[in-house]
Image 1 (tube, helix red, strand yellow):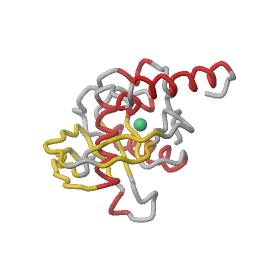
Image 2 (cartoon, protein in one colour):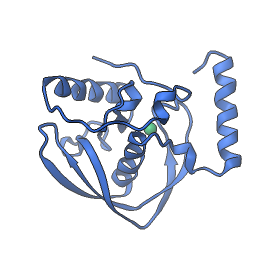
Image 3 (spheres, protein in one colour):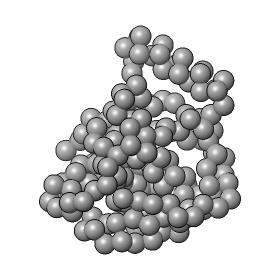
Length: 169
Ligand SMILES: [Zn+2]
């Protein structure tokens, strides 16, 4: 089932999400729906607050469905190490049509739980590191435009306000 993606302006996107404690059938279903929603959008990452749920989990697939090894669900993720930096263009499914340059760590080591609650570690680079950093931010209510200079952030916000007025948001 494709879920509705919450867009910027909805206060849920700036709230902190709660830990997942139940690894039940409901969670499996939610994860399935989140993957379906992400692929349909299309996007490479989707966090639970973006579908209106304040839960600490996200799905990602930097191969856009081409490589099943890159299809990942991270539940209660904790970033334990960040190294280096990369600057690149970034988008967000909650900001349709908005792309900005964002600085992220080049390497990220993250510990998370899988769909059954088992812990695992990921040591990743480049696009995957960017994605984990972006999606983990969502769980703390942090959005990618916060990395912009106040001037650039203001430009983006004004662009969005205009689109809201035009009914294009
Ligand atoms: Zn996002």
